Amino acid sequence: MGTNRDTTVQPDSNMPVATGKRGVGVPGERGAPTPEEEPPEPISGPRGTSDGPHDAHPALRNLNDHQRRAIGTFTDGFADRRALLEWMLRFQYCSFGRLADRIYFALADTHERTTLAALCHEPARTRVSPAHDLTDAAARAARHRLRSRYLRPAALAAYRELRTSATEYAVEANPPDPDKSPFFALRPAFEEYFALQTAALESFLDGFTSVRDVEAWFQRLDHATWGEIRNVPGGDHLEHRILSQRAARGVLVDAARRPSASASS
Image (cartoon, rainbow, N blue to C red):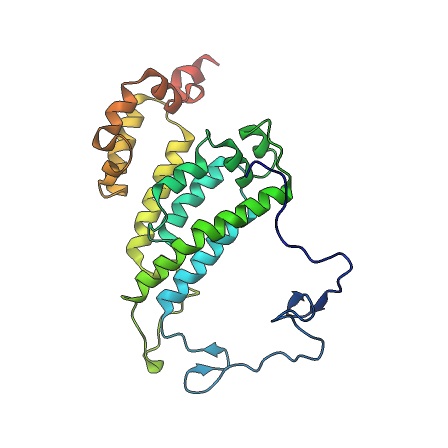
């Protein structure tokens, strides 16, 4: 991943490219539009309406849409490491936790500077890895490799898991519109805990004004995670391990935000 060689396949510069209303493609390539093609007729009949096909599994459709957007965000890259961390939380829900924790650690670990640099845009790329030699093309190729190697299999596993329990709606049952529901896979409980965990993550990344704030945050984290902090390094003793280390306390408690610092400035 540290090389700047772009291994993605690109059309030859002299190869004609067909364009049309439905996109861009290489002539002769399967699925490429041709000038004489007409737009398809709207699907209608017993399984659909003039607006499109009837969706008997709206939860699956909703999950698929969330996965598509999340993976698209990943392949586009991130403005900085914070944006990457916030994305990771969202993808945990999109994948039902099917992406191994070690993958998240590897992607965001500052010790894996080449990987982290490939996920970020400039100037964040240079901040995390000042000596990197990654071009934009090489970084983009690396993100696509990670997408196909890790993200897509995790998303597909989550889709299959939901498929066994998703409600199927008959044509006449007036199913919920997956495009209008804000909930992951039409599961309100998912959205509730996603909101709690997002708030906890943002508070953590913003920093704290005192050790007491850190202690209160850990107690809120119990509810946001259903008490499953045991699954991370340090487990149930993570709070004690962090607060007993001067360096860790210094990282969490932002001196610039302490009341005493504000009063003296």
